Every structure is written in C-alpha cells, then in structure tokens.
View (cartoon, rainbow, N blue to C red):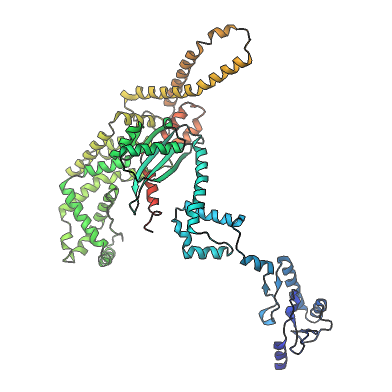
Length: 603
C-alpha cells in the first residue's frame, strides 16, 4: 500500500497544454519521458492508446463509475462557463478551475479612456462628488483608490485636476442646461440671497430661486454660490444680483419677492434694484428675542451659565464626575449645550439643559474649590427659569418656517397673531420678568412688521392660502387686498390676450381682405372695452366664490388643494403660484453655506 501511494505521488501531469477535464484523473511516470502511456491516478493501470482522451473516458466509465460521473459533471460545467479545468493532482481536487486566456488578458488590460465603460465610471464618480458635495481631493485618497481597484481593477481613476477642470464643469454645464429649460416654463419666481466667508476667509454670495411648478410642486434651486471678492456695499451687491439673474435668463418683472436678512447692505441693494424684499422671519425673531432679554439680571445669569458650561466642556474629569452624579440622582445622561451667538434657539436650549442638570452642576462644581465660584445662586436660577418660560414656546417656529419644500410665507401672519393672542400673552402665573420679556419681544415684532408694503405682501400670501384666506387680514384692509388681487389678475389676462387678439386680427386681414363688411363688424371697436369689463367681472366672481368656499383643514397642503381646484379657479391659481412660492426665511441660502463649509475646507 505504501508502494502504491509512492507511485501515485510520482505520476506527473501532461507536459503539453491539455484542456480536457479527464487529465485530472491521469498522469505519467517519471521514466516515461515521452509521455506515451498514461496511467490512472486511482488504480495506477496503464491505458493503451492513451493519447486519445476517448480511451481515458472509457477507462473511468468501466473501472471507476463514480469518478466518471464527476468527470462528466465537471466537463458539462466547463462547457457552459467557458472555463477549462487545471491539470492538478488528485489531492487538489478534480474540480479545480482556471480562467481562460481571454479572461486573464481582459483582467489585466486597463479600459480605454474613450471607451463607454471608462466614461460611465468616471461620470458616476463625478456625480458622486457633486451630489454628496465632497472635496475634489477625495479621488486621490488611498481608501477611495483601493475601493475602485476592488470593484473594477481595469479602471484607472483620473487625476484630481481632471475632475476639477473637465468632469465637474461638464456636469455643471449639463445640469445648467436642464435647469434653464425648467426655468423657462415658470410664470413667477421668488429668490433668496446671502453672503458668507469660508474658513479661509474667502467671500461668497449665494442665490436660490423658488417657484411652484405646473404640477403644483414646490421647486427650490440653488443657481450659484459665486466667489465675491468685491466690497460688500449695497451698490456692488445690487449689480452682482442683477448680473446673476440675467445670466440665467430670469426677468426682473417676474420676480415676486427676494427674501434676505436685515443687513443694511442687502436692504440697500434691494432698494437700488427696486425689488420687492421680505426680511427673513428667522432673523427677525432672533433679533426680537435678543432685544427682549436685554436686562442686567439676565446678562449676569447667562454669564454664570456659560462659564459653567465651559468648565464642563474643557474638562474630561468634570464630565466623568457629571456622569456619575447623573446616575446617582437618576437624571438623564445629557451633556450641557453651548450657545451659538447667531442662533437664539441655542441660548434657550442651553438654559433649559442647565436647569435640567442644576443639581448635578451644583454638586460637581461645588466639590472643587477652583470652580466653587461658578455655582449659581438662587437668584440666578430664578432669572434663568423666568427667561426660559418666556421664550421656550417660540423655539419651534424658526425651524418650521425655514423649510423650502412646502409653503411657508402664508404662515407669517397667522404666527404673529398666535404670538400676540396666546404665546406672548401675559399669564397669571408669569412673574414680572417673564411678562416683560414677552412684551418686549411682541413690541419689536409689531414694529418690524408694520411696514405697509411688507404687510400687503403677507396679506396677499395669506389670501392665496385656502387654509387662511381673509382670516388674518384686518377688515379695513380687506377691500384693498381684494382690489389688488383683481388688478394683478386683470393685468396678467391682458398680457396674454393682447398678442392673441393681434394675431387673430392679422390672420383675418390676410385670409379675407375683400370680404363684405357685415353688421357685426360695426361693433368690433367696442369689443375690447366690454371684454376688459367682462374679464374683471369674471375675476371678481371667481374671487368671491373662492372666499365663500368651505373651510379647509389646517393640515391640508395648500399646493395639493390648488392642484385639485385649479379647474374651478383657473385665474386665481396663477396668483397662488406667484405668492405661495415665497420663502419665509433666507434659510435656503444659509443651508448652501453650511454644506459649502464642508467643501471649502482648510485643505
């Protein structure tokens, strides 16, 4: 048995290339240098006429039926996949496979840069960079290169410069043409703009447009975030914004409103261009809250609060002790919140979390003589509690009105009414400080929203929202708002019907120049005046029908409502598209900068 095993080990594979799977079961002795007599690896018997694989198959079939079945299965599998079996030993298994010469060749040859596969992968990477807004140098990272090699070894990733100079500009131009074609189909649009400096102190200006599509979807598009190295004066900003609109083929007459912050240079630019301007509700609410909490007692309490938060932020030991005390007292394992000077909501969250963790803060800071002076007094805690009660109820409104995928501008008047009649109304349980803060905030908002032009704009937006209509329009202004709606719609109808009438008249003159004058022809001159009067009457009737309609659930999407009722209010629906597209805040432009901060990095 030992001799047989030794002989089996000495059997050598066929020297010349053999593609038949049957050679996995046969070999040659070392003494058979010419390899004329193959021997079976299973029984070591010589096979006469073994140069033909037919005899080898017959030997397996007669002597080793089970192995013959395996051989047939392997042969069939290799025929279907195009892969040949390797001439391996029995120990490595007769099922071992190797790639064909064609497959090995294709696996090692890079794609041609003009080929469809290379272009498809490169375009996918470009879209990945643009969509996820990644820095361009990501393509040179080792991990990214390794990922591509694993996915497709034949693909050679281009340089960073290729993406920045060729691929991304091509994608930009393609996207720009697509957006241009979309913008051509809109009647009116609103916009937002803002200025921003990157981490490397490079200035940028953003421009976004917002409109309601033909299918009644709210569309928001960032047209540009452009480098703006000029002085940020009102004059230069006005010129830059005009150039931006012109570069996109946007008519200034179709601009319903531009929402901005309250910066003096931005306001000056809007006046220079004579564009309707709505101040960002978020900025105004921030200024109102900061104005409402101007009090020496609040400043001292906030100062103590911020120092305590800072003590925990920069000490891992304090955080460790805080976690232990939280577990002991059964308080939530929350960290303290740091205030952001440009977001009043962060101050409210800081105060609320401070009050929640008061017992933990007092215990941890009091245990260390270096921080014992940061322990708040009972007066500080009362002031913080009074401040929190005054502004906590306003927290959710900034975020709710900052959306760009839904109607927001028509909410401003209802929200102001809610503030005045409920949230900022003095309650019996309010201490004097809480009542004073509420009063100061409401006075500031009323003063800022007393501008007649802005007030009329907001009334028009509320009028076009079927959930509100005339509910929040003061009775003395209702007739003025109705008249404005009729006048605007009448002008829109005249713009459309004027060219159509001229075309019809020209066609009549060309087709029947010698036609005998009929009795009806004498009354054609009076037709335009009667037509205008008729249009105004139809608009007024349509408006009255809209105002007398049934109440709409507050949770109803106004755009969906207009989509369903457009056939009944074909004229008013155009006015709804015009005003409901206005964003209540300039948050869309600010979001662009938040994302841009991850692109324009220190690298």
